[in-house]
Length: 384
Image 1 (cartoon, rainbow, N blue to C red):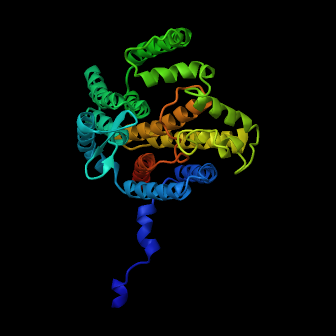
Image 2: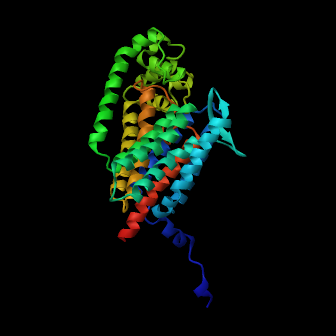
Image 3: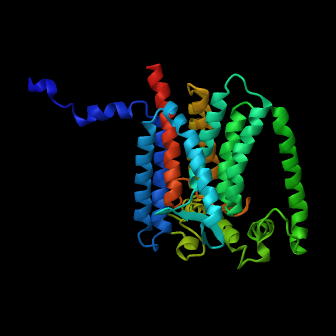
């Protein structure tokens, strides 16, 4: 009789939770996590407990991924509006009585100090995916206009802090949802052409305008300085151009196969600024060279293509839009970070996923991975 009530073994009880986990996606994340731990061990050798803290952050992100993966997409959809409203309310609160650090008002104390803009990286794609799901089959141009307003409000509040890096990530996530929802190319091409023309004019005339001390009214002084520095970092090699110059030197000095693990001179002689956070890609490239860098890029590409494949196979419009947007967040993180360290984009505060040190960003990445796992898991359970 007692055998009837005997508890099944732990592995058998965990099996339903693990069923449907996407193996290829998990493998890509595992490779990136290993690369991150190796690089953090080397670049953070004199940063106290930074290596241990990075490992702890990864474990926390993994736990968040596991628990979010257990929440079906239909349940995630019910969190969209409350999470968006709470995120916007907190951003407004930051603008009114937030905490200012290093000239930026990005934090608020609600018993603990938090950065509400991080919430919007997940809340924004959730909200817009919910919006388009509710209008599936009857989309009108007005619906896309409302979606742009939903996107513009938090992006504007984040840029006002100012926080260009996070605003770019939120903007990219929102635009991805709007694009995947079926926005007409007739509405996409004109802004793209205008943006391209503006970029050409910026490259052609910005160096002259910088030399004359011209200030763009829509940019903060530090943002204008970053653009001017990008175009010609040699004008201030020991000041504003130091980050870009040292990053490019470290990447180039790695050569084909790199200097070897723990052998990076630019890293260990502390020439690379922020070598455990924003510029950790330079430290990685110096030690592992072109071959290691191509391997890292391949791992990111594999993760991104796998995420898009999950989006393509998603069972509902909400899940498809959400998976596509989360995947584009990973793409934007990696592209912007590698671009700024390589000197092709202005320096902004965007970490390299799973490689850079940072608890808040790691939590966001874990939640994003959990969403992708949840969508992949739901699709597999439906098929079985």
